[in-house]
Length: 150
Image 1 (cartoon, rainbow, N blue to C red):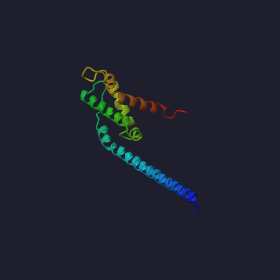
Image 2: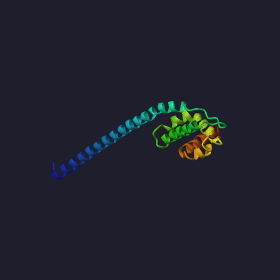
Image 3: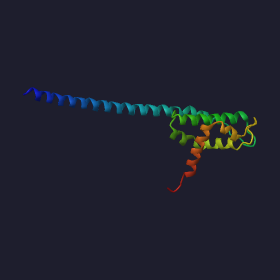
Image 4: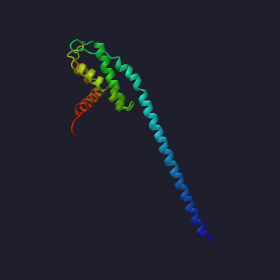
């Protein structure tokens, strides 16, 4: 064989080896990404249990006679849930499935308070917790659209 032919064959072999290495790197990346995604989902779902305990322990607010610490505790809990969803700390789909009705009920009870006992209205308290307000708006829109003809 001529030297030129040998060089061409070597170049082809090197290219094939490089493609093999590239394919291996791609498959490795995809496998790692899948594992990372699964690990992230698991971690997100593990946070649901402490949130469940926290949300289920919230007091019912009577809008005509609210207890100030309970109203503040409730809006803080709603803000925490909303921020966890916003920051992608928890799986929002699981939160919506699990807490949407409780979230909406607690939010509306606070919203309907004329005075939570410290001079602020429920609406004022809500305005101080924008993440909770935005999350409520999304939940409420989803609730309104259930059964809508598309």
